[in-house]
Length: 214
Image 1 (cartoon, rainbow, N blue to C red):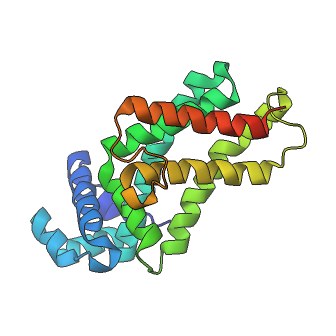
Image 2 (image 1 turned 90 degrees about the horizontal axis):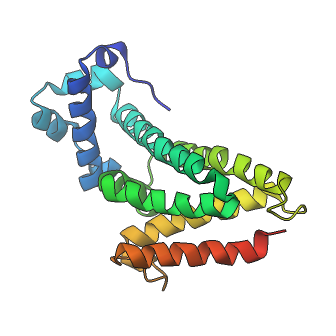
């Protein structure tokens, strides 16, 4: 992923936050292809050339902005894992689903960008950015699966690679269902109150328990 240049990292923290917030808004509203550096510069009241000095290109700005968003998601997931670890593998999984729900409620623009990229847009960085998401997911889930097998919670013949794939797919589609009605697929969580979402998350985890458990 792209790193910001020194001209950006040397800015005061509040100015860096303002640039990234405006970039999130631009990409969330218009997607990558429709995002305008002229419009972004006007919103920030800076010269367009400054943006290119900071990131090199629109691709560089997107890569940096979305990379920071992925990092932002890692912290609450890690906290959920540590908080629920004593409850075992399936409680960690349930808490991970609920943490994802809370994250997109707090940062809806980040998830809107992800959905645009996933379903609507093709651009040079697409595979690179999606690869980063998949790698972060695997890094999160693989240790949980291996620990679950070692503790005897999960079947000893469980294929860790397939398990990680299923868990990533579950979390990803669960969050998509929360944000987009056509992707709900009959789960009934789009626009649903929290208690319904929590109940359905528990049911999904119980469904996996019957297939994964020792």
